[in-house]
Structure formats: structure tokens, C-alpha cells
Length: 131
Image (cartoon, rainbow, N blue to C red; front, side, top):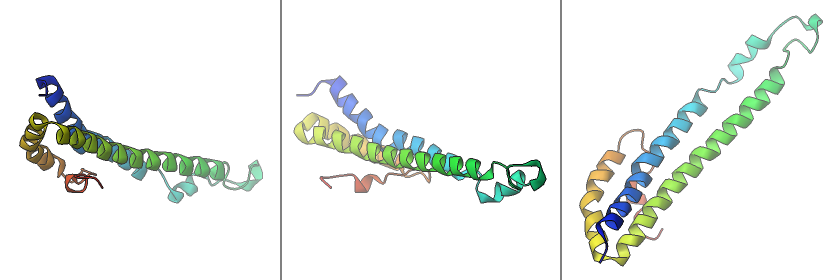
């Protein structure tokens, strides 16, 4: 029989995987979307006679922004995967103990409803089971 703390911990794992971690991933998505793109090249335009070409350090800055966008995108995907794995952990624990399973079944609908906000990245229906 599971202790109350352990049952609560499994509920917290599930909640973190379905709600909290996807919310953090969404913030990374927003950050990536706000990175300035090629439309900012005009800000680097200047007379070529002053040196370092007519676009100054545009290429170096552009390469850096592209790298940063890649790092942010990978972090976002890693967070989504981590959230899905937290859900799988909670469900695996629930599969081993009747008290945990009953508790998780009771709170799953409420947590899943909270996770279905437009910001959510993990659809709880796709994390249930052994997939």
C-alpha cells in the first residue's frame, strides 16, 4: 500500500509533465519567435567606405541569432520530451499500486482539462500507455 506522500508525489509528477513543463516549453517557443530575423539587416546598413562592408557585422550577428534560435528550439523539444516522460513515470508507478492508480485516475481528468489550454504542448491522450 502506498503512503499518502508517495501518492501525492505521483500526482505531482503527472501534473508537472502535463501542465508545468509544457508551460515552460511554451515560453521558449515565444522567445524563439521574438528573435529578430533577416528583416533587421537594414539596421546594419552603412556606407561601405567606413570599413567592414556595407552591412557591418550583420553576418556575424545573423549567424549568432540563428545559433541561438537553434538552441532555444532544441531546448523546447527536450522540455516537451521531458514532460511526456514525467507522465510515463507517473503512469508506470500507478500501474504498480492500486492506491496510486485510483488517485491518479481521480485527478487525471482535472489535470488533463488544465493542460488543454492553448499554450499546452503535450496532449495527455498521447502520453498514456507504453508508446
